[in-house]
Structure formats: C-alpha cells, structure tokens
Length: 196
Image (tube, rainbow, N blue to C red):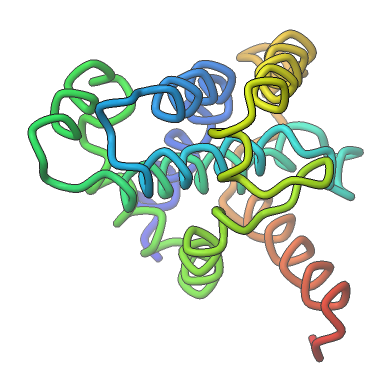
C-alpha cells in the first residue's frame, strides 16, 4: 500500500463516517422507492438494518467502529443497483454518494484487501439479516415494522456520535480502521463457531 493510497483511503473513510447518517437516509429512500426492483429494495433495507443494529462490540472506539457500516452501506447500494433507467435515476438523485463510488470502492479494496472481500460477502446476506425478529423483506411488506425501522433510523441519525470534531485526531492511519475491522470479523467468526 502506498502512502498516497493510505492517506486517500483515510480521508475517504473520514468523509464517509461523517456522512453516514445522510447515507442511511439514502438507503431508506431506496427501500421506499417503488420504481426500484424488489431485490434492490431488500438489499437497501438490509443495509439500513445493518447500520442501525446495535451489534457492535467496539463502541468504546466510537469513531472507527462505524467504518464497516459506512463502507458496507455504500458497497451494498453500489452492488444492488443495476443498469435500468429507474436505477440510474435513483443514482442521479444522490451524486454525493454515487459519483466516483466505483473508484472509491477500488481504493478501499486496495487498502483493505481480504477485509473488503469479507464486507462484499455480507452484501449477499443483507436480505436475510434479522432485526427484531424479522428479516429485511418483512420491513417492505409490513407497515408497522417499516415504521419501527424508520423510527430506529431516526434515533440512530439523531444520536450518531461522529462528526468532523469527534473524528479529530482519532483517525489518521489506515491501520486504525483495519484493526477494528479485523476484530469485528474475528468476533463474527467466533459467534458463528468458526475458527479464527
């Protein structure tokens, strides 16, 4: 990894961390957009659930513990959205998220390596993610469940503890992000009973 790639990656993740509440709102917009294919809406719902779920053991390292959420949300929307006119129209509504996204994800892959592969593998499982006893598709079909998820998203966005000031000096090296993600991956593997 070059110094330039590392510093670009750190700046990128810092900006994604700051914009995570806004990006979460975009995932909710995708979830609710009837013009998008059902599969895209289910993945967007799963990504929103992944972000609002309080399943991070790393909240003592508040800033960086959201890094995988920020990367996964963008990765999920990038992978889910296809080439139809409606999907392109959705992308066009949010240039702040989708412009340069492919190049930015390539940069992440060049720095994160296997950790990016781990995050990519999660995208396919987002539809099956369980939240409060329901899988992602149920949140599209059940108005009450959907309302609850929106409320939880609002609470997340209101209480989200990261901004330019809180990031401050906490995030200067790629290793800071990589170490937290490695711990998260290992914790997940342990929870599934896999060898780490």
